[in-house]
Length: 293
Image (cartoon, rainbow, N blue to C red; front, side):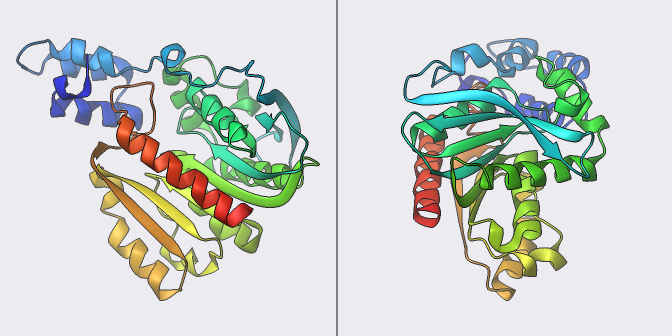
């Protein structure tokens, strides 16, 4: 089932499900009750669930990269230690570093694949698993979402901050750091831009919430803000965020991708928009190369 076949009401329900406002059972029940032409609402809902194996673009055994899991200290975080997926280009370093921050469900296969894509582009990529202090990504998004929502959110953000500092100081890093994140991870990029000030060289939030407006003045990193056209919750926050960016002379550019929905970069579900995702990716890579060297 392709994106045009899926009714808008089903997409709206999926957004509620993805953001933890309803569980999987409620999502499927409510979708099944929606009258639609040509297919059942339940079939449409099931088509939106992620298919990670089909979506992989770079194999973990790809000869262009070297990938491994690493453990590192995380003082002030949930458990004092973190685990992440570290992917380096196969050549000799050092390399500019990119922190790849997951959505609200832990380090799933899509985010690991994004980290591998960055390594192919010449970056040292670290994708931390915010669920590692409680056993790691559990193998499915439903349990991952529940686990992440149960965590101390301030400590979880501290774990992401410590992850950024770890990869920036890594022996294979040039010391130039960028951060990219999706959904919850997009909001966390903005948090890092505030907390790290000049230690973050560039930030790319994909459809993420902005920081507290009074904190925008602390941002020193240039931002590339990637937005979906049909994303009312996030887009409603944009005018005030933009006004604060302008007022504090923060360097930024924003791209709004026509016809897209929240999550359009994630190629494991029909919300994926191939043309927009490819353009957003090219812009992201170019932005990091310009600011990280």
